[in-house]
Image (tube, rainbow over all chains, first blue to last red):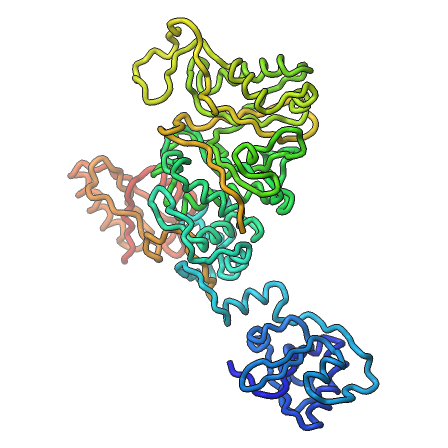
Length: 475
Length: 92
């Protein structure tokens, strides 16, 4: 699109400042300057002679107009000067004319350009902009319900998804500085290249807002880290799915929940970030139940499981323990089955509370199974207070829990002899229930209730399976 | 006007939705024969029933109340639960 040399004004009738300045535009024209007026709503509005109908807003988009009126001077096909709103001094400097708009106030701010209205800006960027969106276009017929179309193509986890239109995906991509065609990694099980665009498409379907994108991207990166072993976690007959724990300033920024019902429903960010990751596994990776996903039971966790940590406690945060300072944000991924509640409403000191937690922990997976899955224990505020008041650090609590969870059993582990009698007594002494580093404590939950939640993970861990993976949330 | 959606998948499958894969053999499968209530459709399906029976294939018969409307949901669900393959007699 070419713009004529001379003075250009962009206006709309639905703007008192444009109405105020209209006679001045006429004056500029009368005093001999070449003037072109682009009008966004009513072509009959400007009194100038050369009026261009810009109801499609292409000129406004290409001129990057945010406010009307905007006055520009073009020399040799290029913008040489710009004045925003009505400002006598600026308009005189731009036109080189003295005494413009006699009788008008010195200045008046303009109004919002129609080209930057919500919903319009995305449409214009898609129509006229240089947008890269590396994904196949799929046409859905007029009479087909787009939500049903998504179901029929197998894109859903069983719950409705938001149809990934170009506009929605474009908006989602505004949530990150990363290029749409950048490859984040290979999505298991099919090892399909997963671009930022594919992440955005699935984030749209999951119901994410654009500002969640950096968290979703960090979660996807962490999930694709070979140490997390997403392929095996997907394919296992065991229950687990990925769980995302979020730390840092991004938690309040995007409105995440770490308080009441923290592991439950009702918070958009918690619900949709975890779901986006699982939709990526399903759609980009091709991992579906009864196919590559061989879970015997699965768990509701696999609809998506994401929550934030309460960082208002004396303990170091999960991310801090894993090397990301408190002022930065991070996600940590674990494998996770459903939460198991632990009620202890009596302990007022750490020792009996550790004993309570340990009793429940010893039964995880199987009461005689040593070297069991890693666990995350979400310590509720009332249990946390018991540790805090006694001055116990997180490391103190973890050490006590390791000591208290030793069992008289055998290290069945996984990948051992299938015929090993599961109830056979140990040949004396005790063995650790959990491997070194296999107990993770996270603080979260509602104020009332002397409870904590044990979240065991996949039986296969470490070099044979999964390890927790932390990734910093970038932009 | 159509709605354009962006493909969320790894794009390994064609854009067009694919029909279910046809079984290579009928051994051990149950075949449903659906009469849509068009004239003489039953003659064709009776003969098919005979031929499948000769080959030891289990056959179940179904009938739509009228060819003018889609099959009632109940009938569709019944067939989906009882058979592996359906042969539908469409012609007059």
